[in-house]
Image 1 (cartoon, rainbow, N blue to C red):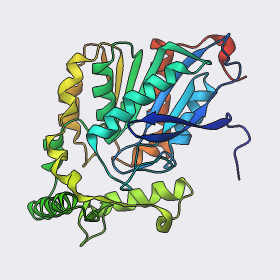
Image 2: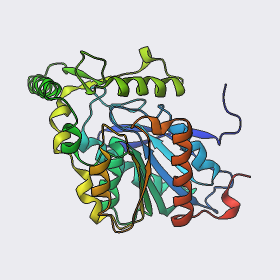
Image 3: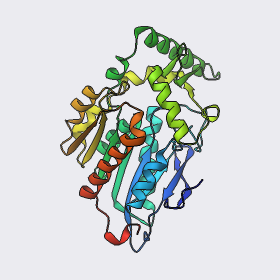
Length: 314
């Protein structure tokens, strides 16, 4: 059943490269060109799409008076681009810049009050985006992927070798103009995948169920070449260049983005704030862990990017 209390949203598109990204735009009551509000630009993590429970966050932010632009990367979800589910770090970073640029053109939005919010792999994109764009007002990185080497070290050697082999095959297929060699984003035992623990798979299934998505309808595989780029991705090194306030929500039992490495890198941010939760990587999206994280995020926003009282939903 639809939630009649949730703020309304509308479908919008913006250009990124040669393709268009699809987004949901949430506008709180009272937002207009005469009374513009802060906007939170939001996207999901590794191989995930906005339908995977990002609406739960956007509903809460919009109810507090913030506009939200929640987008799918090129090649994913409702956005354009071929091959489907191509996980390109460079393209996703470009999509973030395009989304922020588009958000600043919205008449109901204050272009000087753009917040970037990312979870998991997008937590790293948020750091990179905020470090590059000095106009960003604030940033929130939830269970953020900040250090590819630290993440890869969590994998058994056999799984790492299987990922590298699959990645090399896919890269060769790409060079020869063939169809991608694919691997699972979330894998069961015996499958080659980017997230391969039984605990991660159970948590992913719980997240799908909470989002009303049938596992059979979820695109859970990606071209394998991304496995060759993840170890080289270390966006946390840019944390020291983030001038705006930034909140890091760290899951202490995160086996995909290890907490120790995350906290070490997050501590470099001059205006960084760190909140820690006794939870796993996927658990922070649900139940009491979600409530704890969203409460801290709303408090952070109220301190650093407050909305006018008459912009909030009554």
